[in-house]
Image (cartoon, rainbow, N blue to C red; front, side, top):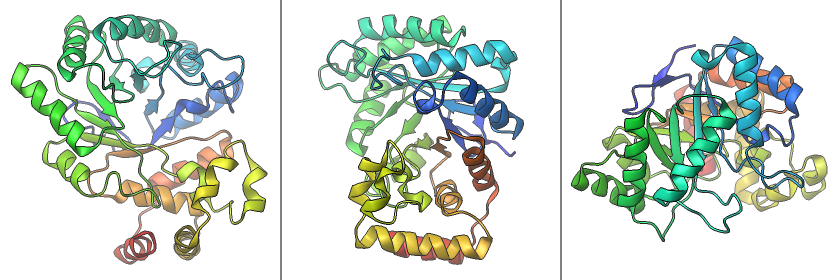
Length: 315
């Protein structure tokens, strides 16, 4: 499968990233191994996770996803086959978002140990930390880059002004800059990326990997009313999409999917893949059937009419 350059990182990834938030949560170890095996067999190569995945699950403490990925890479001798993206700064028990130099130095060692790797390919600041200056965070990353513990850095959940400020601090102080951005983006949730943020990423050649690419599953088409919300653990989070605009988007997905003999989720992911400025969307699967659909999405080519129909419905 054809790879795309991930901004200025020097890395190339396939046009779909596996979302590892499900590992140790809705996918147990065996299922996770099966999914990762098939993912790599399909020619895909990038896996996204975070140290906090999946701390929200009763009995978990965080690190479960990284641990499973590390065990899979070791069991399959697969380190050289995948690009590992993980994140730091979420609440791992410290009670706040934390991008201080002291915390990053500690957290990276824990992630490296769980992943069983010598270096993380892409290390992202998970959330903005208003208490820590960009200069301190970027200096901490500079130390990790020079030590060979991470290969490139980026950030998640920054708006255009925050990303601009971080880039300016890096340039002024001779520090490494964020070369990757991970924003929320899908057919429904377009406002935070479309516009200034996307323009900035394109102008600065920043790689973009989007999360919630299926709007918490809403864009799969399986949630058509509140009666459908009990179908999964994520159902309650879908309720906000059940409105006239959401239904209009589903109608457009239905039409384009029927035209291509595809599933709604495949069309929704293919739309993100086709967006200017996007390197690859992140999408999760908890079964091989779901994963096959995502693999199909990576190969689905939407024409200009399809894009226009979806754009109009989601405007």
